[in-house]
Length: 142
Image (cartoon, rainbow, N blue to C red; front, side, top):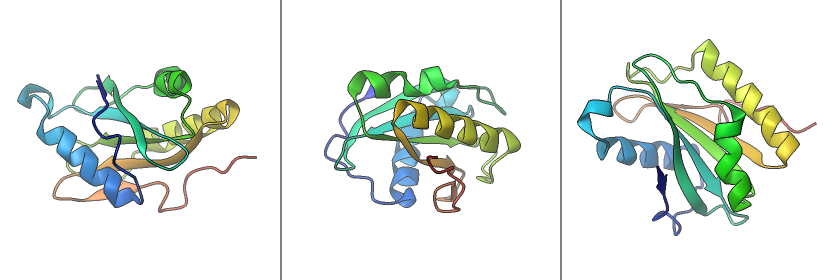
């Protein structure tokens, strides 16, 4: 599912990403709210949203996404950078070992594709979130 009506929105900080994901979760079908969702937010050179793509709807406690799925639309749309975001249905936004692993993997894939991974935001409950970017955990291009 691709959402394109955010084209006027500019992402300035991780809090903006968390707010956007919270809105998307609130409009999600109630049967799917308790599953992990993984979104890719594609940004143009000015940092405005070019697309928001739900690339994976997971289970209660897991989400599998390959770089191929995450970067597919980014390549097709020629974006400058992406932000990935997902929710933790448990409500606890602390990243799991799988979250840390996929962040490293996606950062490397982005380097090869020359599409920067700016952040990976994990959204919990009550406005709580974790930002890999804010924590300095996004691997830099080599």
